Image (tube, rainbow, N blue to C red; front, side, top):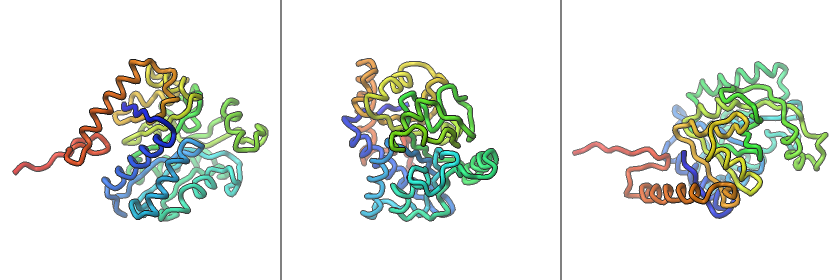
Length: 284
């Protein structure tokens, strides 16, 4: 697992957006071989989305051959509600880029059969060959998507009751009124996220420092569902300095030293790609 430590949130977004830009362009997606990416909502990815939109406007990035799967959606919140995750994604990313609407996949919290909606979502992911990169954020309690503390680490897409702490945290998007926040959601499972070939998690701010410490310095624990990233062969966390407040100094220095070496390996002359894979060329 890689831990990338940046000075502040803006630097976190800059690093992550450039990483995604390079991963998509290195992949060189086509209609027959699209780049499949999992996407989050909430405040964490906003800066990343703004920078991806700018890359598109500058002609550096196309979404024509990108397929997206969002992490979650509220249950029984109208699709056109300003706080639905459909609205969030179209407002902050999709309407600003060239992604074909049929390539966008977001769970339908108003489906007649919610369990079937979840089952079919998993089938859609499988049908396109799985997710290449899953981008995510976390809550202060370390939950990923809406996989609240205590969720099974092998869970799949399903209906989930929101923890009261999550309802309180999300009330800021509903005028501070907890009564307006939906109490149920549809969410991909921890297992769904970890099935992706690469997982990148954004963590910023002192309010998430304890969750980062639990994820990095302690064992895998279903009470901190993001800790499952420890078991992923290609997991990466991008955080800011404030998020490291609960980490041991030795831990911070260790990961910074590892990244210093990694930067040396990913120069233009290097045979190491952005995804950490070694590029082999045929010998003459």
